[in-house]
Amino acid sequence: MDFEDFIIPPRNFKTESWQIGNRITKDIKEDSIVLLFVSDYRGAGGEAEVQDFTAIRKEFYRLSQLDFEIPVVDLGDLVSGKSVQDSHYILQEVLSACHYKRALPVVIGGSNDFAFSLFSTLNFHQKNINYTQISNIISLKQGEEINEHTFLSKMFGAKNFSIKNYHHLGYQKHLNEMDSVRLIKEVEFDIIRLAEMMNSTEKTEPFFRKADLVTVNCDAIESFGEPFSMNPQVNGLNRREVCAYMKEIGLSENLKSVGIFNYNIYSENQLNHQLLAQMLWYLIEGINIQRSHPKERHYELFYVLIDDRQYAFRRDTFSNLWYFGDEENIDNCIPCSRKDFDDAKKGWLNARLTKI
Image 1 (cartoon, rainbow, N blue to C red):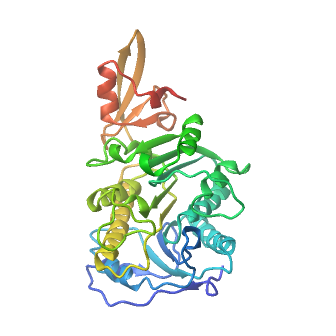
Image 2 (spheres, rainbow, N blue to C red):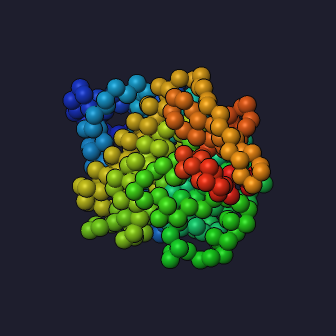
């Protein structure tokens, strides 16, 4: 498919041989990581004019390429459509082209509702999607227009959409109406508060392990000085924490699409550009590590007795990651943490593990 009419190719930058910019190409390759920048912020109350991502690219291109082996493609900047729906349609066409080549698209910029396009396109290529979102807001508002407040309700309400699991991480109580939170809990999707994500990724790593799609709302990242996001918040994940989580996203065994939305593209703060660039870098590092792992895995089996009932846990001997369940097929077991196993030995079983 010819994208020349709605993608502006990136500028060339002079980089050193050891920097990641030295290995970046502009055409979609098989099994590559494809970066695509989006300027349409109408879903978050912003504008749709073409924005300049040069400052972010400069920061990203100068980072080390280490021993990365997966090709990285910078496809360029998506030209916004006349309407928000047009932008979604154009983005879905580009994403579909990536999936046909088994490339992993990473969409940067644009408002949080573009998560709908990532999900919709992936749903066309596979069913039973595991979707994890990092966002401080849970909104299930209804409305004809698609925006950052309505896209989740459109996603959950679409008859042809197939969601296996939805995990919402980074929720902040003081920013949310309780009706949306209550509805999410009623359908037994997971809601994880910001407090449970701070300082360590260990407790929430299981929510990324089998994710097909992960999107990050930059509003969930704390802002100081010039806003980092379109809806800046004083509370949120700090700079080190969000980079650690980007690496966890990359380590997902099933990852097929990533979105980083609501970044404040109007910012002139170099540190904001640096943080977004480093978030991308840690994501790519995680993807490279995951694809270097051996395909054949071995598991240790442990049984725990609680109230005269026996429960099984498995530990991956290579990655040291834990699973709950006694199924031979590890895909039928539930990702969990070492803490879940230790708590079970003390007689307390996480309710999340037995709700299915």
